[in-house]
Image (cartoon, rainbow, N blue to C red; front, side, top):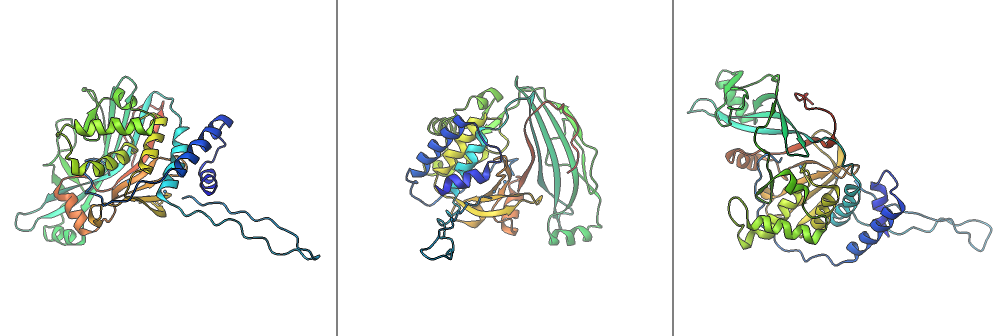
Length: 365
C-alpha cells in the first residue's frame, strides 16, 4: 500500500523482521480505521518556552511486452498517495519507536527568542533576544542548565527606527526575568559568555498544564488510548485548574503536540503520541519545508480556524523529532500578541536525546 511505501522512504535503516511485521500490521489497522470527523478548532493554549517535515510515495512500473515484437511503454504504476497529516504522523511514529534510549543524561539544546519593551516612556520599542539553552537531566531527576545569549536586536523595522531615535543603545537592564540564579543583569547587542548551573530543586516538566517529575513523564503510557486518558486526566487536574469543557479538545491536541517537543518520554510513548495526534481533528500537513536553520522536514499545522492562532511545527523525518514549533503566521499581529504575553515565539530544537556527554556552557549555533 502507498502508506507503507511512504513509511519505507522515511526509515533509513531496515528494522528487525518482528519490528517490521508489527509495524506493518499496526500501520495497516490505523490507516484503515476511519478518521475522526473534522470540526472547528478552538484557540491553542500558549505555552511559555516552546517555541516548532518529507515523504514521497514510491511508484513502480513494469515493462510488459505487447503481442508484436516491439515492447510497449510501461504501464503507469499506482498513483502516489497524497501526503496527509495522518500518513506523516503514523510514519513518524514508526521511526520514533526505535529511537535510542541509553545514556546518562536526557539532553536538549534549543534556540528561542524573548522580547522586552525598553526605551523612553514616550517612545518605547521592543527588543528581541536570541537565547541558546541546554538541559541535562539525569534519570534520578537531577538537572543541569546551560544558558547563553546570542545578542539582542530591535524586533521590527519600526522598533529599529525607535531604537535609533533613542541613540542606538548597546545594552539595557533586565527587568522582566528572574536574575537571582546568577544570570546577566543586562541585555546587550553582543553575544554573552554564558553560564552553567546545577539546579537545587527537582525539575518539573509541563504536560497538559500539569507539572510532572521526570519519573512521572517517563511513566506515561505507551499506547494511544491509555496516553489520551492520562493526558485528559492531567488536563482536568492542571495547576491552573481544569480546562473548560468547550476548550478540552483543542487543549488536548495542543499538549499532545508539545509532548513530542523535547519531553523525556520513552520511545514507545513518543510513538503513541504521534499515533494519537494522527486521530485528532484539525491537524493538517503543509508539505515539505525547511526550518529557520534550513534543515529539511515536513511542516504541519494545528488549524484553529483563525490564522493568528494556529501553531505550526516541523518534523525531521530522519529522527521523528520536532525541529521547530511556533506561530503559523509570524506576522506583526502574532508578534505583538507574543510580546504582550511575554512568551517565546518560535522555538528551535538543535539537539535532543540521550547522551553520556557531560554538561558544559552552550556554544553558539
